Length: 319
Image (tube, rainbow, N blue to C red):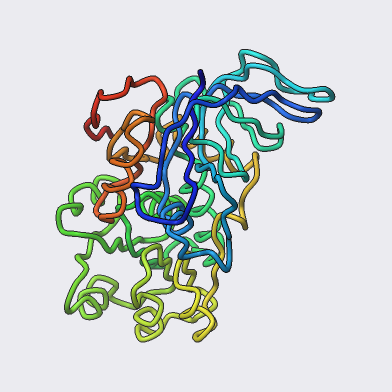
């Protein structure tokens, strides 16, 4: 029987269950995809615990998951441009990607480049389009200096590289253990912690032109204190600070399109972007995967694989 992640009430990871379910069937205008890899994201923790109930309430039993990559199995009436056997990556707006099969409209799919592996393809959508939207919101220009908080995380690592690819000099705020990796992708590392403001001023020299906050916890206010125009600050998490200061809050919904996803997949396939994978877990070990994610110490993405058997355990980081 196919499997899917479900939870029946808000709570910690122990509410998550991998259950046997009927295989979904595509209706008119829908595509059935057999999932090979599917990413996990911090926002899913907040939804599962009820922290975002007012903004994105769950209905029970609830599924879970947005990112995925896999092969098309079947299409419903009226679907064109996609056929059984196609290798695709995409997203679900119905919290259903953490499963062996997912049903979505064809507009939520992009072709998977041959050079892009399944794991990165399956973890790309949320982090990728969020980073794309945030960088676009602050509009970096060649020769400018852009700071990115959480610069080694799933969103931050891609945002830093997208800003770099736009010609900006990028300062990446992250733990000291990520300094060498940030340098390897052309980003100047600055360690977070006490005295960060002074370290940023020293690293920037002539000032910071734009700021992308992927972490929260006071970075918007820090950016304002460093003289960054609020119209060139974007936070994907600290909505209260943005409302108070006039900063932007553009994130995944501002860039959720197959065209953006296809662009990002191509950049990864050709090596113009690097997306590190912190860990790969079997679908059945979804609880363990979220425990690791909740520590907020990962470099890049954590991805679930439907092909790893139960009990296979965590796979080491790649890339």
